[in-house]
Length: 428
Image (cartoon, rainbow, N blue to C red; front, side, top):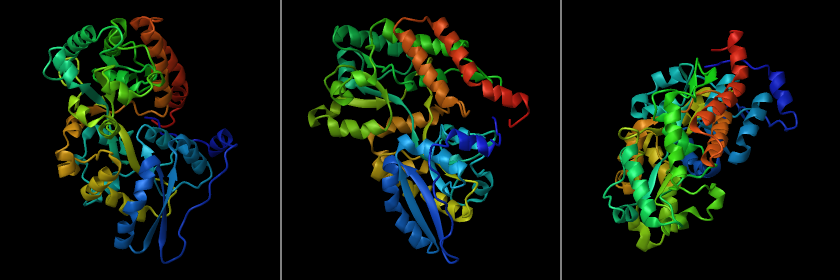
């Protein structure tokens, strides 16, 4: 994994058009003010958790700033360039490698080793691993995300199946049977061509990595990825899924309810959405299930957000106390009740609300089998390339081998700077 100290002038030049944020620090000698940047709904909810922390730590005040996800990445880079990063931040775990590469984040191994409240063995291993870059820990998982099956169990029963699939072969039989019964205007599964996550999950189920040679080159021509891509494209070739983007489906919840498709690969937020949006008489018609793999229960993506501590913080000890507080099972349960976000610690799943939720149970199972995407700063660009190339293949423009080759070409171009840095002995 590269760790390089980017020239600050280059970063400033890249974002010169963006205004630099204000500084941070202690307002007085008697108290410490922590600046905490959080995104989206989590930022709103965080404000309700902070007062209890402040009462327990009277010398610490927490200033929460809520950022929209659409602006967060640029704002964080701007803050780094201007020496005005917050003390603590919610960071999507696919961003961690990038901020490690510019030397923005504080390693946390020593603090975790001395912590009485954070036990890495209580965290789902694949989720914890998303925070490890170059052998060092840079974040503590805050909430988790993974993808699995939402399915219409009534439509499966009508097609002759009493339970969801557990391997690819069984899944294909179900897809064929559901489509045959549904007819021409309905489908067995929805795989939006502008989403890379379903294909990524299938690819992570393979033994071969997506990048090779210390992530210097793409590895999409490997047997494993070509196997995953071929399985994915079968759904389009047989007409089990429409050739549509998410925008082409007016309302995914209504379409799921009316039986336009029987399978949908999605994340935990849709538990609440389907509960709210489907009528009461349809609530018994759907369920969740772990993703099937090639030869049995399969892996899936390791997503979510983590809590990170910035190197430039002047209040690292106080910030770490806040991370420990937000990482306790009790607070994670409260956070789940307020947001629906799934907790990263097994202990936190022992509450009645989660343990008794039939829809969340499959996520608990799946979280034991999640894998991180490649931890390189360029990963999001590579994922976008994977989506674009797979969409061309889904429309029949590329064969499996052609798509894999094209994806390696694009990935190798994206990773050119990484190879140059490694050749100069910079980072690792």
